[in-house]
Amino acid sequence: DISVHNETDPLVAVAIWGPPGPEAALAQLLPAEQNLFFSSFDVLAAREEYARMTEFLKDNGVGVVVVQDLLLKDDNGNNGDHDIPASKDELLDRLYWKAASLYEEYGVGDLRRIEDILPKLVDDDFERLGPEKAARLNWILSLRNACPSGNIFYGRDQTNVLGDTMVL
Image (tube, rainbow, N blue to C red; front, side, top):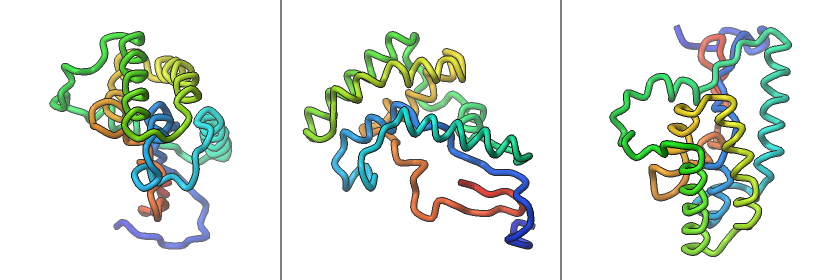
């Protein structure tokens, strides 16, 4: 039974996409009609907001499911994994190349700012996920396709309730 029985009952669990990363930074080098962001934003600040939100939810007894973790757990390795960067340096090199390519193609955004924050975003992912999962997540979201999947967590009507779990 997937339904909302009472919209005023205490929140039990949420599923959240995960922290914004290099994909959100790279997407800011796409034209607005492609990135679908209302405006550009500070990805590092957004990561801090994400961490505070997650901590707040957990501190208040709400279970938190990170969808990025599920993506990495359930990925069966049949998605061209042979092309995943083998090291943090290779990942950064490919992200820099992607940023430069997007900027060259579209001429929008602040390339220097994006290049400046990529190492911090990648370092955080490697610390949070470990090398293999961080490389795979960033490959899936930032490198696998022609355009980064930067707006995946900013969908319209982004809140849905499944039973006693809210998907943000």
